[in-house]
Length: 369
Image 1 (cartoon, rainbow, N blue to C red):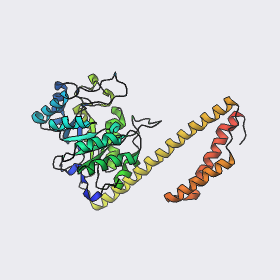
Image 2 (image 1 turned 90 degrees about the vertical axis):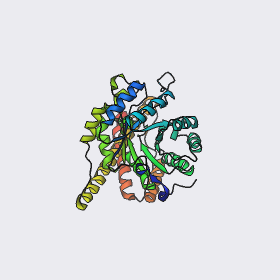
Image 3 (image 1 turned 90 degrees about the horizontal axis):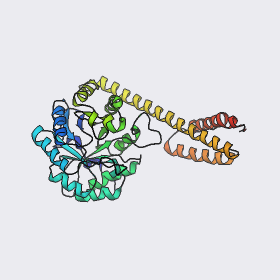
Image 4 (image 1 turned 180 degrees about the vertical axis):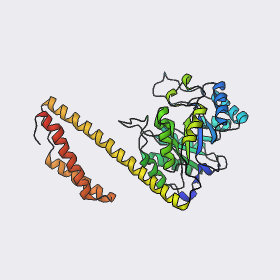
């Protein structure tokens, strides 16, 4: 499959339906459509929030367990159309099958979203792409549940090849073994790598699904803006306390107004200020990568502790095999060379990690390294 040609992919944020003079483009609305009253009350509140131009609501909700609330179904599309006609906001919803695409288009939904659980399946994405042939509608593709860049890129390619040109990526975070403090680990570098591969691609941040709770919405949203994202998606409900899904990550329209007011945006900067902003952006990215390194080291420490505990319980000598370690190190150094990383730095780090494992865990179990 050929890759998406950057020159032929339009920014979803600059399409005729999503055209907006200022950034970020803000998409907001409830996690799930629950009733017509809920939709209209929330939309009326969001209409008063400066910057919100698109109303979204979950019509069909993919749930892990069948007993959970899975959305109201097609009736919610009628409520969405009422919001569009009576409130005057553009509308968006997530689709996962060709049938859902057809129903959404019949109800004049302005923007379609492909969810994380759909992006992970090339079969479903292709089904949606085939259903959209000959249709010009903006499509925002969420990252797959797991951090697989090729799946994310592949979904965009399939839609592009079907004739969809108004494409954007929606970064909603990834499921990892340890995502704390987030609901879904952001892995910002993963989204930035996709944008590097397709520079013309609009990048949106689903702050609510990354954060998982209200207290993290501001720092997540701010980080997205600092990294140059084109838009934000924030879940908003007129009364989150009674929400049927994800109540802890939804905020009232007036709270969204305060959130957007608190975010720092860098508009109308002088050239010197722009250079300073770029440097600060790079510094923040390095800080995040440092956090990522610390998280990985923490996870590695926990795994080695488990190894030591199991070895002690089974009476197995858990000291590192020198031959195996040499092979591991040799492989790491080859990868470092290919990645343009100083081999001496890699060697020093991993030798120290190995020594720390021996000191911290093996001696604790009466073993020698």
